[in-house]
Image (cartoon, rainbow, N blue to C red; front, side, top):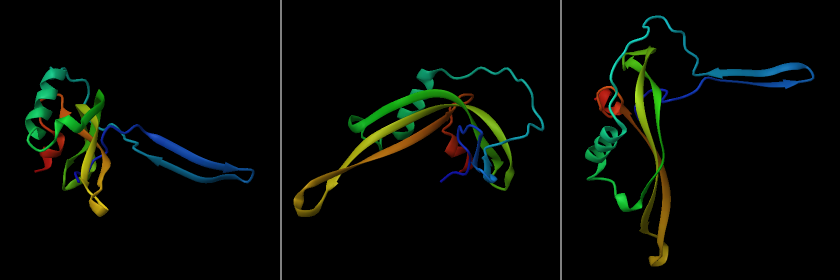
Length: 134
């Protein structure tokens, strides 16, 4: 699995009782230490769909695949596998899918499982984001 915090929103949660705060946790919080506004052209949704089709068309049965949601997000990724304390925000098209997979079960009965996936396509260059670490 590729390390990273894909498209997460900062989350702060607390458990409070009459005695006060019992538990406090926070995740996906970031300090912006460099960067700024950069103007770049993004690939179209159609180009992102073609990237997914080209990357997975030979291994995914499209007859049982359902795309639940497509959105443009910032994917927060480590700068490198060696620098897991420093992250970069990449604009990305995210495809959330559900796929019904069938297999032979006990006694010759056909069984199925539902598999959910998220595929992130870099909206700058059209590369599947997990491939950045290969």
